[in-house]
Image (cartoon, rainbow, N blue to C red; front, side):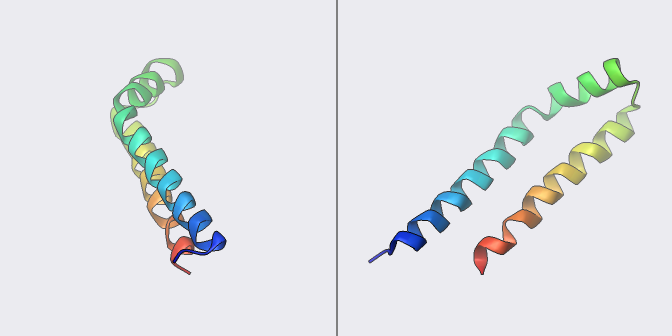
Length: 65
């Protein structure tokens, strides 16, 4: 049986996974905007997206505790 704290933990894990999936699905749009509006090269924009996805992956680890 799930306790109230367990359900909030599960909800937070679901939200973090949904955010990372949303970032992944709109990343081509974000890269295009960074290249045109901010003058980033494609490689620089790729580094920004990669670091964002890596940070989302690391953010899931506290949920395991």
